[in-house]
Image (cartoon, rainbow, N blue to C red; front, side, top):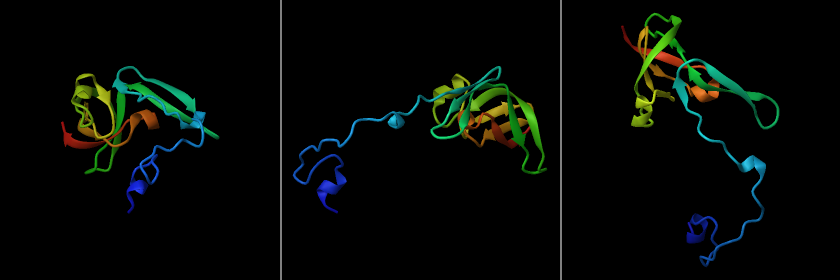
Length: 128
């Protein structure tokens, strides 16, 4: 592959190319919203096009599934044990995908993105 195809924004001689348009409103993103342990707080935000997205800011409970019995229960979250995304998140009780949480049912791993789905779904990894 030619060198100039790898370097985006540069011409074949290495000259910097100008952009063909300005930034649009649709190009902007949004800040990362941390879901924390606490009293439930959520809000709804409009999506581009039709519909809305529910955002979870804080939650006291999680929907915990037991793979051995096939049962699902709503369980209170006691603590955030480990967060592979960032070690500081565990200290601050921030819940993201793959976080290990301590619930009344036992240790569980979060299987969804809580800020995006407005609910915390988890799978039991160790019974109490």
